[in-house]
Length: 56
Length: 148
Image 1 (cartoon, each protein chain N blue to C red):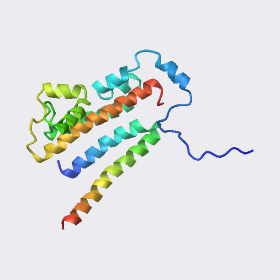
Image 2: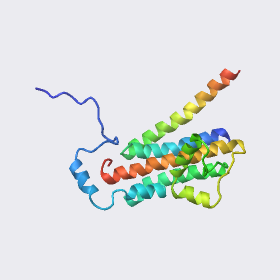
Image 3: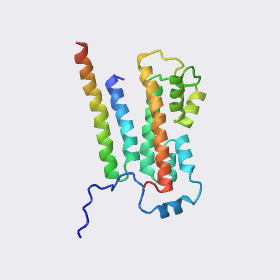
Image 4: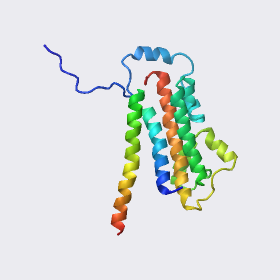
């Protein structure tokens, strides 16, 4: 398993739980879950690039 | 005089309902903490008890999946504590309920972190426990009527 796969799995599992527990209606659960997933995965990608550029 | 327009809406958010009397009436029936305890012991069980089958199944799949991935990555299951950070890790692990105790009894997980992925696996197991606590509290809120 690569690091990026681990990041995606972590984001998926955490987003499902956040979506279900933090919102009431199914539609809002789905939207919030997708929002959390994008934030998890997106922030990991952005921070990875930042660290890559700092290390050069 | 024209009433001031609403500036925001709480519709769909996890807020206290406007009928606390009804919620209080519901909470008087049966053991209120049963979904909380069941949800902690078995991921998703609190929602299953309340008839929220899809939510419970998704929560169970996510939490058990995260725990299983952590074990597969040779993550560590905390048992003996030597410092405060390990105590926090043990607290997170205990959130997994029966998964943690079965894992310990079956000898799953590594005693020492020996491979690179094991550190990630350890975090997966701890976070699975913390997510399970959130799910169990959500089941409790559904039971008491704090959440619809």
